[in-house]
Length: 119
Image 1 (cartoon, one colour):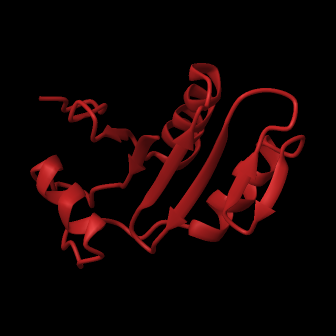
Image 2 (image 1 turned 90 degrees about the horizontal axis):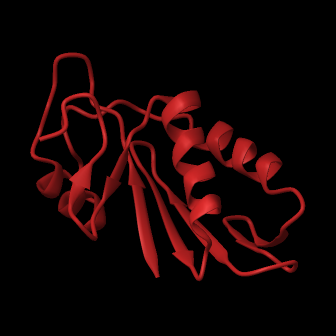
Image 3 (image 1 turned 30 degrees about the horizontal axis):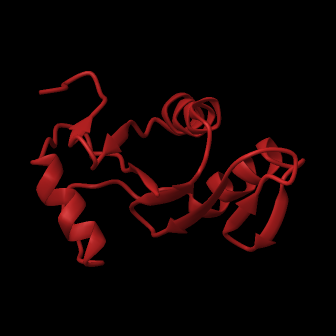
């Protein structure tokens, strides 16, 4: 499994990314994050992956190749668990979240957040 995690800081706020990630994993409130349009994001991802089998409301499986992913959406974050998913598929998810929803990727495996203030 490979995790992709997204959130958006409020204007002028910049927190420790690993601490934000850990708090989100524990479903704790994180002051300084903007609310996300979770339903809109899920609808957009559903349309991008309309050729994939929608296993349930938050899971997709590629019946024509490798990969599956599951999305856990909260009011302030989107967490995508990828299972055997190709890099190009993960890149499409990352690009969509970044360009359309202004949510840069936090990659907890490294751990690095890919935004303009990358440290």
